[in-house]
Each structure stands twice: as structure tokens, then as C-alpha cells.
Image 1: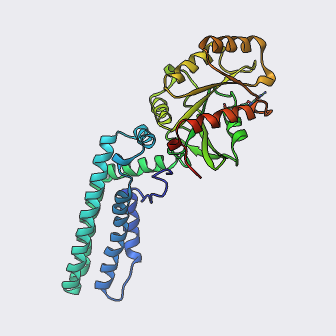
Image 2 (image 1 turned 135 degrees about the vertical axis):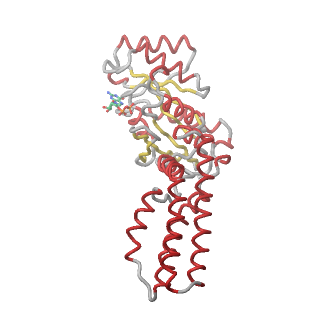
Image 3 (image 1 turned 90 degrees about the vertical axis):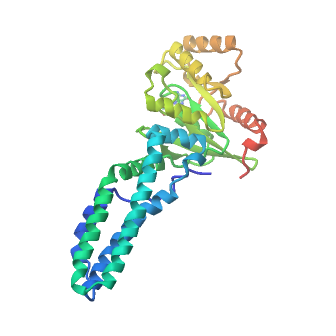
Length: 332
Ligand code: GDP
């Protein structure tokens, strides 16, 4: 199951449709005046139908996977979205009905009435569209934002890579992925999410990093990032938490530990990994190891960049994912 918004056809904003239709009118001709006015309304009908198709095809909120439901919450208030979907549907249904009625009226009326009837229809429909434009545009904005989360499949078993900025998350994703990771983006973050896949013994596993989401203490996260964290929690899988053992670490060891504790609160299986072992600072390294020993956690030591310790880590990850229940692992 990929992003349910991915294939959604998004129409232009409401006022843009009215304006372009106004500009189009003089360019639409016909064999007779009647024919011309009917063609004009038919073209408007086709444009309005795009809004109708759009809401009909909009994924049903009640059927969204929790990951995408959380992502939708990042972008909008769900109740407001429901209202706006219904407003858009109503506005487009009524407008299409009106246009059909007026087209019939033109057919039945004297030729010299055709232009007046067309203008009347045009005015009524544009006014409906204008009145609903705030809502229509809202649904369009929501769809545009949600379409951005390409490539994240919430059903696939997933390894989420968390840890401080610059620790080597995206390096690890690219090193363990079978092919070059795809780039996805998350609503309202400018950061790119790397989505890789590992195909192993017929199983497909998804591996993603989490820039700007699980890399700072809770207190520093804004509302959107908190919701994003919630969405990540709804992915089906385990988390790798990377510690930076090098002197160039952006966060102090204490802050990294604090962040690890917060990620633990997500109640997912967490594998601690100490990265940059090739450039480790003895004091940092010792502090991290002391903490993990006290925690009773089993950890892995790697250099994502130099490829040290990756085979062992991969073995452990895959056996963990496989043993976490066959229903959670999808066959290729
Ligand atoms: P992210 O922000 O956590 O995704 O970190 P990146 O994967 O972009 O890596 C940040 C920097 O750390 C880059 O310059 C990498 O080349 C470097 N880096 C990543 N892994 C290692 C490692 O194992 N050892 C060393 N020395 N540098 C690494």
C-alpha cells in the first residue's frame, strides 16, 4: 500500500478556474449562437467536474492507515477537512446540475436568448464556486501536502533511523539499502526523508531516516514535528537509534542520551548503535557505553561511512524484523 494520495488528480484553485474560464469565454466559438453558448457552458461543466471527481476520489478519512491519518493531522484539522470535503462535493454537484439545466434551457429557448441564459448560468455557478472557494482551496492544499510523502509504505516492515543531526542517518540508510534510496518529503518540513529498501530472502524491508523529526529533544520540537513523531510511531517496525561517538558530534553525550530516552517513549523496539567508531572520541565513547551497559541494552558499533560492523547489524535487524511476526513481514 503506497501513499493513498499519490494518484489523486488535484484541480486548480477555485478562483483560478473562474478567472481562466472568464478569459476562455470569448475564445469559444460555435456554428450558431446557441451552439456557441452551449459549448461555453459545457467547458465550464468539465472544469467543475474536476472538483467533483477530486472529492469522490479523495481517500476516505475513516479508512486511512494511522500513519497517513497522523500525517493528515499535521496538515489540517480533521473535522474541518470533513466539512470542506462535503462543501466541495455539494458545490460541484449543484454547479453541474445548474449547468445541465441551463444547457437544456438554451436548447429549448429562442436563439436570441442563448447569450443571456449562458451569462446567467455562468454567474450563478461562479458565485457558488466563489462562496465555497475557501473550503475548496483548503482541500486542495491538504492534498498537495499529503502527496509529497511519496514512497513511504506504512504496511511494509520498516526500520526507522533516529538520532541527532549529522550522526550519519542518511549515510546508514544508503549503505544498507539495496538500491539508491528515494527522496520523500514530509508535510511542512523542508527536510528530505531518505527511503531505502532492503530485499532479503524474498522479503522487502523499508528503511527511512527521520531528519527534523526524531533528532531534537521534545521540548525543542514544534507541534508539527510532534505530530510527525506520532506518524512515525505508526509505522510497522523497529527503530535504530544512532549515537555519535566522534568529537564533531553536534549534541553532547548527555543530550544524545536524553534524546534516546525520549525515543524510547515511543514504545517501539529500539536498537542502539554507536556510529563513527572510526573517529571515536575515547571520553564520549566511554560515556555512551557506560550508559548503555547500565541500561542493559545490547548495542552495535559501526562506521556507516567506512562500512565497519554493518553486516552484523544487518543480520540482527533482519532476524528481529522476521521474528516480530510473519504477518508484519510482507513477501515481495
Ligand atoms: P544525518 O544528518 O544524520 O543524516 O547525517 P549524514 O548521513 O548526512 O552524515 C553526516 C556527516 O557524517 C557526513 O559528512 C558523513 O560523511 C559523516 N559520517 C557518516 N557516518 C560516518 C562514520 O561512520 N564515520 C565518520 N567519520 N563520518 C561519518
